[in-house]
Amino acid sequence: MAEVYNWQIGREMEFPYAESRPEKQWGAVFDINKCIACQTCTLSCKTTWTHGEGQEHMFWNNVETKPYGSHPVGWDVEILDRLGYQEWGEEDGEHVYQGDTIFEANDVDWDDMLIDDDLSNMHGEDIEGYRPDSEDWAYPNLGEDEPAGEGVESDTHIQEETHPMWFFYLPRICNHCTFAACAGSCPVQAAYKRTEDGIVLIDEDSCQAAQECVRACPYGKSIYNPEKSVSQKCVGCYPKIEEGLVPQCFENCLGKIRQHGWINKPEDADPDNPIDFLVHEAEVALPLYPQLGLEPNVYYVPPINVPTDYLFQMFGPRVEDAIETYRAAMNGDEEHRKLRGLLHLMGSTEWRVEQFEVTDEEAIGYDGDGSTVARVPMEEPQYERETFDEANDVYRLDVT
Image 1: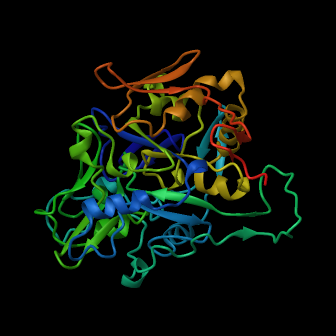
Image 2: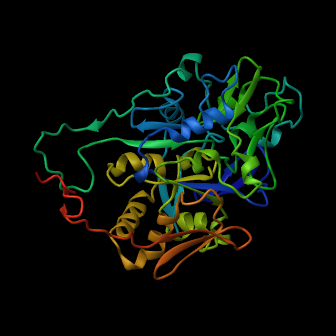
């Protein structure tokens, strides 16, 4: 069996190809607690990349309301049901996934796979997955703002840390996975991972419209264009990445929930690299459904108001610790001051922040050349206005 090491699940796993990591890996962190589902990210992506014929149903960026929203319809429920048993265990103090990934669910001997460009050799067809129906792409706002949990009365006072009635917003783009199922399944190898930055692309000139990438991507982010007869997907805004900028959806995010940069393996983590710090050092940012086995490179700070049993399924066994750390930083714990400063920096510049530091007064972000690209205060300035403005003979507050 071909085996690769997936640090997110704590073990080696089966995969169609030998492990080959890029020189740098495109990475991102989304702070779900700050997302307001304004869909500005969705529209900025839509008007930039998916406004052509055959792309009407495509949302390379979308924001889902969980637990009931999804685009395509039921993408997460479908793949989790197909995987079945998804238990986590512990070995030598580390969390280890004990179930099957999508590459292991069908007991395939990947060593027997023929790697060629013969369309009849559907060498990735045994990757567990499914192809959404055409209608599944028609409801991008399904379940929007629809809550789960118990009912509350008008005078209910919520004392618990999690809410009895809840929902949260999950912004999603292509994860540019380390072990991308779209690339592993493509019979003509049109889907590939760039060696210079780890962005996953589809060569439309090579695509033979087999739609195996659509079937294999468990996140539903490889999408078929019937007008062009090719599959298409998020391109990570690679033209902007090459210029040291952040992707379009990051730059236009009103809630400033997104941080873009490079992600390293745990043993190579740099604590002054924003993404490494959030993922490896503070451990507040977690991958989406790590048990699928793709080692996705978009990470999420989980919502703090949601029952953790649901979040455990979505983000893995470290979710309670991540929430505890985030709460401590939010409440001013001095131990997590560096984390608080970095959370202030998120979304503060159109330039990619590759290094950062937190001083007594501010958090500072630097680009790849060491130039300062962002400064934010650690404490927001406070202004108190007089109730009555004598100079203009008006009340500044609604007291009349």
